[in-house]
Image 1 (cartoon, rainbow, N blue to C red):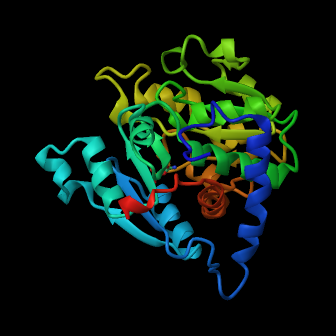
Image 2 (cartoon, rainbow, N blue to C red):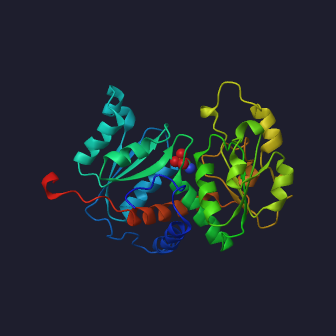
Image 3 (cartoon, rainbow, N blue to C red):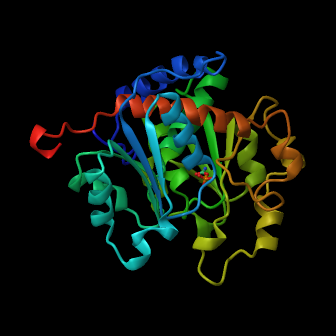
Length: 308
Ligand code: CP
């Protein structure tokens, strides 16, 4: 593939190929020299129109470990603020010989527009409510690493499914790999057609949490809510916060995951976030190896000699 725009259109074999590619990169972390020359001479550009701590820095570290040159576009001080279009910005970066362009944008479909107009490999680092494929992949890899299987694994996504691109990428990947997926949250934050995908819907967290192997807790995206959040934050905390009392109702080895950034005290209590069941920091570490694998597997289109 040239681009990674989402997980919806990947099949089980594609996902398994990615999972199988991650281990060797992860084993590099234990070496004193963590770099390999795979992408020497290649240029990776990050273009983030929305804030990020994990994804942008993880891509930068992944690309540097592969010996690529990395340029981080500071969108707020770029010509985007003078009104330059997305395609013109992309073409400008490609004219500087970018081989990979990693984009985060508030609009669903923005990475797809660049992919159709550029030879560079485009990687979606999160687009609106649509997808966040490398987060989906690192979640999948972390479940696979910890539980040794995905087929038949029972995974519960908790909270704001409606606004969550992480939830969408998790659902597409987990369905294809044969997991059983359930969601739980207030009816206002669960898409009405989600059961059509084979996802079980719960509204009672106390009931849902008892049955699962993995609990992936989503951030309440207050910045994407309309003015009148229902339920209120107070009601949400009462009904859907994953607390130590609720963790005690779950299976003893249940994995607690969160893509970050966490709203401690809203969707997750601090004692759960820091509990032995939580693998939240390991998700972040795995993100580097997953992104190394993705950068290596994608193939930018070859430019013809006259354009050099
Ligand atoms: N999980 C995630 O996308 O985090 P950032 O917003 O910090 O990149």
